[in-house]
Amino acid sequence: MVRQSGLVRSVLWVALTSTGLAASLPNYITRVWTTDDGLPDSRVTAVLQSHNGYLWVGTRSGLARFDGVRFTIFDSGNTPEMQSPHVTCLFEDSTGTIWIGHESGELTCYRNEHFYAVPVKGSSHVRKIIGVVADPNGDIWVLNVEGELTRIKDGFMIPSPPGKAVHLLALARKPAGGFWIQRDNEVEELEGINCGLCIWMSLPSNRYIQGIGPAMTEALVMTEAECASGKTDNGPKTWDRHHGDGMLSTP
Image (tube, rainbow, N blue to C red; front, side, top):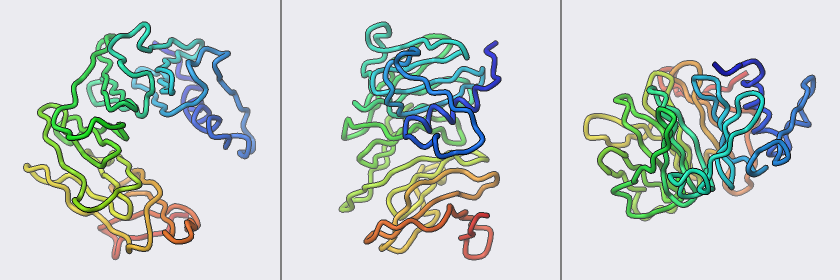
């Protein structure tokens, strides 16, 4: 069993120090890990703590697993299934399988201490994978930079809206199962046996969503900004469809 003491905080610090934000937070001791400590690359692109306590760190030059003492590196040199070294996202499903998205559009999974290359069928573009997520049935979906959402088991693909260039994309897991997908100023969710996307919330066309994430309930936490100025509103907001008009400012 991996010692978990300090690893949750490590998730935060690996992410923050890669962007230079950690120095601005008071009352914490900062521990910075770089290539000198065993990371394959100091440019961190994704961080995940798995259910067994390991800290997984995706970088532009490979994947690293941290056990609280040392890093173990996985890349195309020692793990042929890792066809591309540039990791873009990490996701652990309910079975403990870890899914690894790549800049090249390839997908890898880690299950029962083995890596496997997973084909992404159905997509009309082999493009950078933005996110990986599971639906309420446990099926895995990937979102690429073109805005295409593809189900891995059968290649069923939901395309990006026609005639609309998408600039900001994100996936977020819903607390009770399923997921949200963000495309610029709209957030959608998967609905029904036909797996269609329905609009969950939408902002005026002169505004866009900068990022999304789950709240403690079925609500969605998001930040938004004006298109013209890029000015961000003060603080994140929570969108709850069961509460009036939905939008609530968080404390």
